[in-house]
Image 1 (cartoon, rainbow, N blue to C red):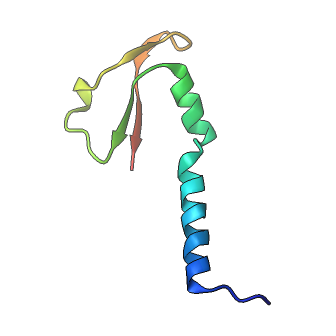
Image 2: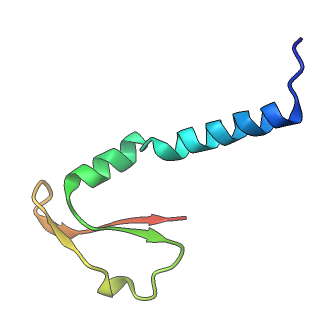
Length: 68
């Protein structure tokens, strides 16, 4: 089995993490294609005050929340 140095392991880890972050996931591509606001974060003080947009397919005002 081939041995990898610590520097090589760090490089591999860096490449892998940037690859995942640089490519949008299918769900994120889909919600961005809808054209309504997307609110991302850890906390929303008052959900009743977030910006909404018209979602023609559902015939309503809506927004996406991505809470992490």
